[in-house]
Image 1 (cartoon, rainbow, N blue to C red):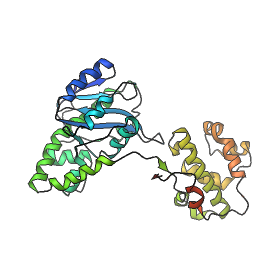
Image 2 (cartoon, rainbow, N blue to C red; image 1 turned 90 degrees about the vertical axis):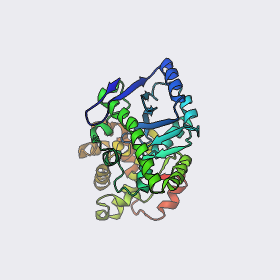
Image 3 (spheres, rainbow, N blue to C red; image 1 turned 120 degrees about the horizontal axis):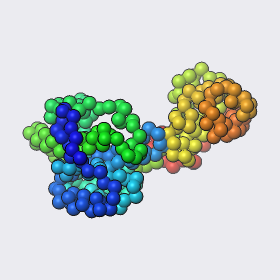
Image 4 (tube, rainbow, N blue to C red; image 1 turned 135 degrees about the vertical axis):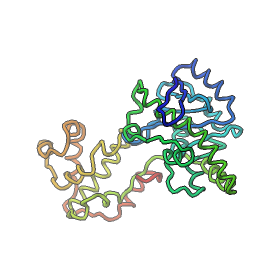
Length: 318
């Protein structure tokens, strides 16, 4: 399908959700010396980012692959690791992480437009800004689109255009940035940075044992309330990891603070506080009451790291 909005060139894209379409896209992409690669994922609602869409462009067509459809996409891994094919990404760190986590894919021969612009000294590195500065294109970024539910099927046409457009425009941006790097003698320096991206791997978020101290209002709590907050903060992290749910969807920071102050003695008292929704009360109410009731009268907040580090592997801090 071809789409355009007047601010950028028309974009031709194909939705790939069947084995026959995968095969036709494989033949086209394998013949391309340069590919632009992008993804859409949900990092707002999940503890672990959920990969929802893969965009690969050969300079003419943007192929939109549905990673939720169960298709065999192993051929993409072969293309991504082929050093004879240049892969253009923009701030591709998370893309590389998710491809490795979900498919075991690795990348060779990368050009990252975000890193390239940084080497050139550009102070603002969003894709929309770079498209305006280097290509004269006004492509507004929509917060609504960025936060939309990318796992929903079918995707709306404006979502598909949003996803396809960025991958399509990476080609012209790459050409311009590469020329600038060559003119300023910075291509080799940028190349070293691009090569370092090849070793990026996904790692599980890790618990930050001192994170509860950073919540607004912590300094106003007494020692018992601080101890309750510490327990709730750890419980929320464990529950979010267990259910692959964003922590704020388990309990907000404000709810944590309110619970440690009110100390409901039983489930009925917890319900009367109004701190939790009916759904949260049903799912987590008993756990929360038991957790808060177990906090000792004279708690200690010392040695957080020593007691927590044995329970959580070293990894990305959260």
